[in-house]
Image 1: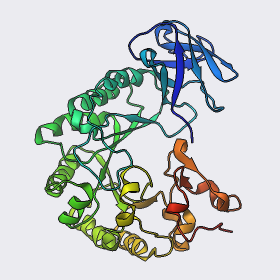
Image 2: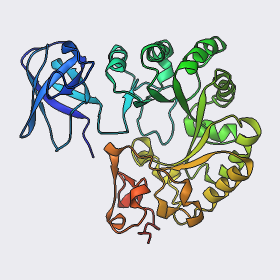
Image 3: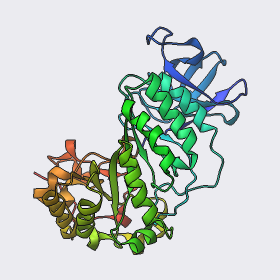
Image 4: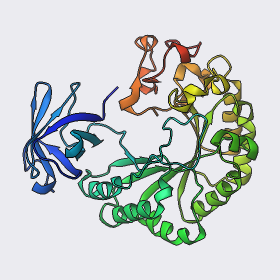
Length: 367
C-alpha cells in the first residue's frame, strides 16, 4: 500500500499550500518559483527548498516523487500527495461529509468543515500535467455544489484537457443547475458516477440509509442527462441486492437507458462493510450466476457494462472480458495465487485489506 500522507519537518509555520515537486527549477515549462518545491532525494527523506522556506519530507517507502503535486501543511508537520505523476489513479477528496449512510461505505462520513480543501484544488488545476484524469470523491461533493461547480468552470476555461470523474449520490441537483452544468459539459469531459443499488425503492433506500432518496435520484439522473452529462451508474453487489441484479438491468434499460456505463462492483472490505459483513458479504466466486444473469440482460438490452473490483478468476470464463483494472494502485495488491496467473497483467487484483476473513473461496491462477 502506498502512503499518501507523509510526515514532514518545517522550520516555519504557515497555512496549507499546493506545490509541485521538482529536482530543478526549469524542469517544466510552466514552472512558477512560488509554486515549486525543489528537492533532493536523500536516504529516508526528501530535502526540500521552496519560497516558503526549507523543510523535509520523510518517506516510508521508495517511490518516484518527481512531478507530484503536494498539499503542504506546515502547522501539522505533514504533506499530502495530492497528485502522483507516476500514477493513473489520482483522487481529490472533496469532503468527508455525506447525507447518506451506505451500509458498505468505504469512506465513512465525518461531520467536519473541510472547505479549506477547495481553494487548494482550485490552485492545483493550474499545475496538473496535460491530459490528466482526476477522480473527485467524498463524502458527497455536491454538498458543496457551488464550490464544485466553480472548480469545474475554472478547469473548463483554463484546462479543458483535464478529464474528471465525480462520485455523487445524485441527491442535490436542481432545475436551475442544468444550464450551468451544460456550459461545463460542453467544454470539459466529466463523467458522474452515481450509485443505484436496486430497482426496488425500499431496497435501495435500505442500503443507502436514507428514506425517500430513490425518487429524487431518478429525477436528478434525468436532470444530469439533460445537461449533457456522461453517467456511470454504479451498483455494489451485496447479499441484500444480488438476486435483483438482472431485474435492475431491465429497469435501467426501460427507464434510464441514457447512461454511458453500468458498473457492477464487488464490495470493498473496509469502512462500514466491516461492521456489516454478516448482512452484506456475498461470495460471488462460488455463486456467480446472479452476476452472469445481469450481464446477459445488459448485453441483450444494449447496456454497456463492466465489472469493477472482480478478480478475473472469480467470474465465469465467458465473462472475463467484462472485468477491468479498477482498484487504485495505492490500495491494490496481488496475492500468492496471482504469481503464476496468465491474467495478472489485466486483472484488478485485490484490495490491500482483503484478508482470510473476507476470502472468496474460488480464487485460483488461470492458465
